[in-house]
Image (tube, rainbow, N blue to C red; front, side, top):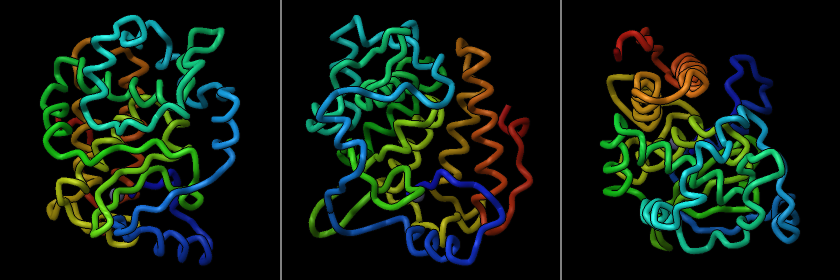
Length: 246
Ligand SMILES: [Zn+2]
């Protein structure tokens, strides 16, 4: 599970809620509802919230390439995304549908030459990735289930609202859970050395930061996300910086 919030200071009530949610590995396969489900009925998607320029059609090669689109769909998305697609691009040329923004994240991973190994990792370990129009609980971006009722990763509205680099990192994080990395302690990993989904996410973000051929905006998005997770998501703080991954 991953959370959007990174604030160090929280009220007791919030901390308790996050602890409840932070188990990170659930065992049921529920369905959720939320405001996005009503938008899904109309196909009227909100414009991208963060770094919308990174979701411009110039970057979304799959839009004019059905073969690439079909290829990207083999990396984990389940076959139930129809209600989150349609009107994928707005009048400014920005990919705005949840389906399109999720494909953009896969495309970043799969078609950036320096990130090839991460695409292979996803292929090997992913559970079916389900686009939910609902909300699990406030603050939850994605959640991976594994249990008697099945295996699945749900992504929620907060996932679609992130920038494409962040979304890609969250996909990697959840695949890490599917691959069996340890559940979180509360909402954090215990330490860098012990490993976990946040460490995996950080290693990916560092790879994005140093990947050839991406824009300065991609690098900036990777740097911002890397810094926030490194500062906030380990019980035992790590001193590692992006420079250590060069
Ligand atoms: Zn997690």
